[in-house]
Image (cartoon, rainbow, N blue to C red; front, top):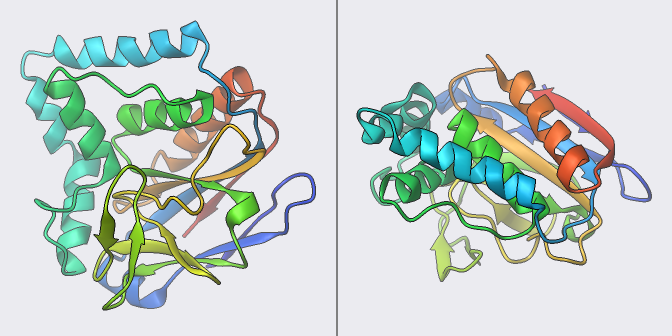
Length: 232
């Protein structure tokens, strides 16, 4: 069922929905949407401390690589396979972050908003997309990428989107659970964001993670007029 996500300020209403064809192949797909006014400045030391704490917790596990086999990670891999994308070549962003931690590379430090979503992604094991609403046009549909579709991923070369689950607005694809695009990326100038937590394993605990993200944005990114929605 489509859900209306009401951004704050002067941003337009954003409808986020899941394409029926994707839902047929991945029937438990559910999205947790969070919109907010934010300030995307440098992360506070306390937020960076939270990131380091999660890193340390994983490193101290008897078998750190076990986090890569957690149910949300396995559900994401299964969804990619169902859509025709090799999950060994195209990983969900949560798995990529966890692999950095397991390899001892630590979590990236970008800005207060990006660091907040990365923290939730590591905690939940779920991919989180993040979009500057100033660069989103029209409604957003979560669907499989079409043949020939590409975009320049953040810090990456052009990403082959065919068969990849993507978020697409009136201007075309702009995000995916693997890597978001430069077009809608969050920068220091960003004032309003839409974050989408992607669960291919159903709605359980998704509201909890949406509320966790809302709290982090409020605490660390001057988040206000925050709205959360679950899209089934």
